Image 1 (spheres, rainbow, N blue to C red):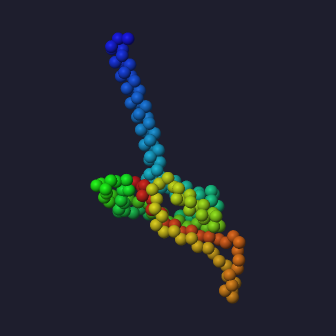
Image 2 (cartoon, rainbow, N blue to C red; image 1 turned 120 degrees about the vertical axis):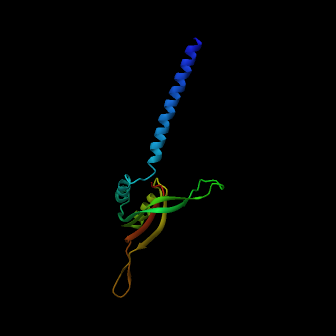
Length: 157
């Protein structure tokens, strides 16, 4: 092999490595962007939240959706010298659900596993008790539970 052909092979090898790295970077960016909500993906996200009804058995209803334009977020990955508040928009979602305790509990678990940066700012679970006119509580082995959640989705742009 001549020196020119060796250099040509090295250039091809470097070019192939750069092409492979570019494809890997593109795949990583696509994967990363799937964990960030945008105006274009909010409707699908909300539909997916409501579709958890089919997975859990609880009836899920979105009661409110809004965008907070001024939410200060402390970057947890910043070093001590870099700690500062970053102001960015967040998506605020309120939802209600009705079902058995097991259904509501499963729903809460699935919401905690959402692939987004989510904070639950308000969570309230209540059980419906049936009472007789004399105030006596009727035993129901499978009472109806309700869940009210307020979510803040920080991974929103």
